[in-house]
Length: 328
Image (cartoon, rainbow, N blue to C red):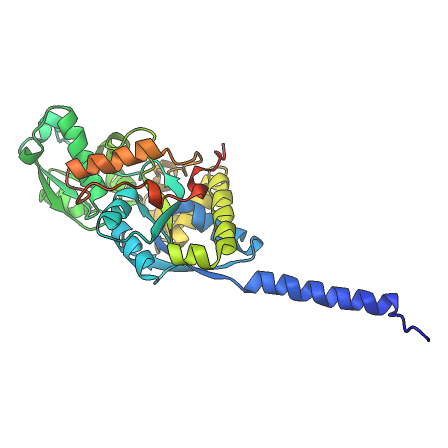
């Protein structure tokens, strides 16, 4: 019987076609919807801009959300597969039954916010704010942080009035005298300092939580994690790579990326606000793993100050990926 042998050339062709199909399938079979807050988080934006998600064989659709609570709600409903937001918003979600939202990776230790007072103001210490008005954005993370700062100095938190302002901060409210102080985020903070002579006192997000608590984090819908654990793993790998890279980026490149995804052309803005790029606080990713004890203590502290509605044990809702070794 004559045996028909496949020629080496034909075998190589079959192998090449098979490999091409496999590579194409890996590159296009996974799409992840990610809820991001305009301009944040830096690690995910770097991963998107520098192609780290594509390197992992996933396509990430960036879907803007307005705040941490909105991100948690979108993740819980399945409107997005993963998201980013503050830990207190997540803790409040868990307390309200959104237990399908899992913390998969730490984000940052703080939020690069600033408590500002106007030029010429004599307000400096917690006691100085008795009877005063502080403009704060809606998410509870800022108000809770300020209440901790006040209470730690022996100030009755009910003696200070907290006035809700937009998420981006309202520098005009400070200039008009509607409030005595205001909490802002970048680039509004640096603009107010440079244009109005506002005086930054502190970053509330660095004085309210325990020192090693995770302040912001990445979350994923539990159904997504179970449905496609490999895609989730690749998503996490790209975020980790972006977090490490962000700290090494030249300042101008980091500013350009943040501006592109915030809807604010920071490079052009710097032409009318000299010094903006040089003085902006660009923040830093948390390169260490989640400290569960400290992060739980932050959520517990928020319960005391009204930032989370009731006590909640966060440990069942933190995935092993959040405890992996530090990137430092």
